[in-house]
Amino acid sequence: MKAPIAWLFIGAFIAVSATFLVAPTVMLAIQAFSDDDGWTFQYLLDLQQYRYWVAFQHSLQLSVASATVGVVAGALIAFAMLKSATPRWLNQAVTSFSAVAANFAGVPLAFAFVSTIGSLGLLTNLLKRAGIDLYGMGFSLFSITGLTVVYSYFQIPLMVIVITPAIQALRPAWREAAENLGASGGEYWRHVGLPVLAPSLLAGWILLFGSAFSAYATAYALTSGNIGLVTTEIANVLSGNVASEPQIGAALSVGMIVVMVAVLGLSTWLTKRASRWVKQV
Image 1 (tube, rainbow, N blue to C red):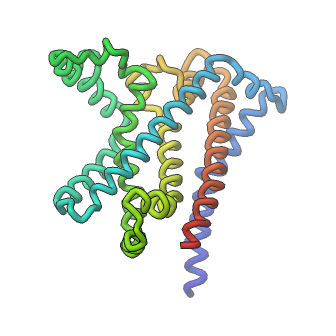
Image 2 (cartoon, helix red, strand yellow; image 1 turned 180 degrees about the horizontal axis):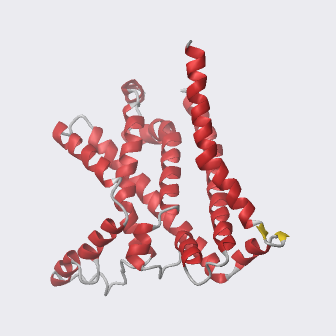
Image 3 (cartoon, helix red, strand yellow; image 1 turned 45 degrees about the vertical axis):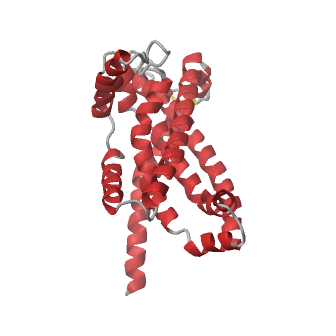
């Protein structure tokens, strides 16, 4: 009885995946490579236009920057939170806040940052009174740097949630063995801790990269589409004056899929290399 039930759930999962993942991807590919006259590569060639190249460049810059900030800061916060000297109430508070902040995005997040560090934001004015003019120093919330700061608000808590179980899985015996052999704290992390955590860190980075690369509402609400991102360009194509050519939107979507597949392939290769060391341990 157990095998049929298991296959029932596996079949349901395959059906859902095929319906909501495989089928839309195939439809996008068909739409990107065809028009009323048949098969064509024209819509993919149209992606060579400057605005689309800039959109991919901005999306990659934003995704890489926010994912990297999220991985580094999230891992450090999780490690500090799990130290034995950390009060239990602080651990619970960080965990609860991370669960909420990781899902706080879109228009509310954009409004919160505009009210806080916008050109007339509360924190901006307080710092200006203290002699620190953020916007006079070149910072702008409505730029790639500003978007990176905003995205980090939900990227860091997400990384805290993702990496916490991996840090908890580190065996205390490894630290004790390293110390008994004369290794310092830095040497332990360089030769033992970080190599063991490397697959989890890479997986977390990919998750954060994909989250930022596919985000739309926050960036659009904050910049009104003035900063070209792939997601905002897709929205402009489908809802703007060029809505008669949705194939461009499909081609942009296919481009996003290609980028994510390439990043996932690179991550898989790096994870396999990192996992060899873990197996030896």
